[in-house]
Length: 73
Image (tube, rainbow, N blue to C red; front, side, top):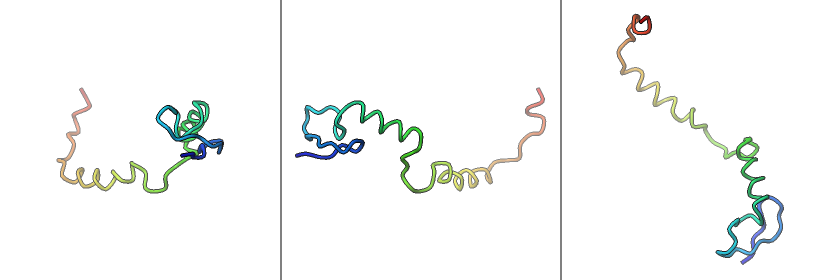
């Protein structure tokens, strides 16, 4: 079976020997990784922090008030 490399669109044989699949080469794989790292590629949806905020707020409500002298030592 042949697929197109997500980076350069060259046809790539999808087989176990191809260690870079679905990419055609390490170069294309690294280009794709760099695009994810620089956030050029993103998956739409809530960020991880947006997902946690309601849980953190809910947890914080159950905590006792902070001791004012705690950090003065």
